[in-house]
Amino acid sequence: MQQRLARGEAAALGELYDRFASLVHSLARRVLGDETAADRITREVFGYIWENPDSYDPKQGSLRSWVAQLAHRQSVHRLRQAEAAAALDRGADAPEPAETERQIREASTAARADYIVTSMPAPLRAALELAYFQRRDYRQTAADLGVTEDEARRRLRLGLQLLSTAHNHRTLPPAQPAEPPPRTPGYGRQL
Picture (cartoon, rainbow, N blue to C red):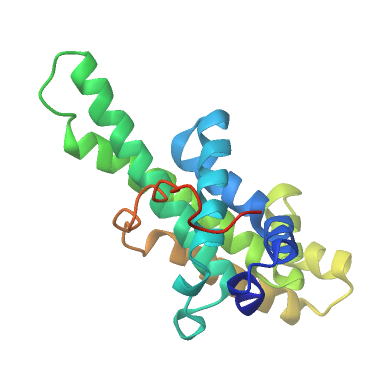
């Protein structure tokens, strides 16, 4: 995919968009709490990917993780900008940093939990959904999934362990660059 993007294949960007646009949009919406802002972040992230396909390093993690990280960084950066602008409009010198950072942490944790659930293997996700949304215990979950009780407990335990990592992450700094650079006529790639 990266090589195809580097060659300027618009179809590769379309495939990437089809695979990850809902992830980017949901992460941005979770952080910003605004559908229109999430749409804008989604466009910016895929614009950045189109202009900078070589910025992805497969040694650092999966393509999905990299795209999610770009969305998260851009969303957090946009939230901080919005908070600073709101403070200026109120006549304050700066937003209350502790409150802004608390909002960012809460939104980031929720977005990371969503990402973890959608990324986990289907058997783990199915067990958690039965236990959480349908209030099934491990015996009922085992029966519904057609697995042993030990297997149901194992799936639930592993799924919950994965989910618990949502609280154990650092807030990432803003993406560099925060905004894709302006296009110069005749420079850059065209779709």
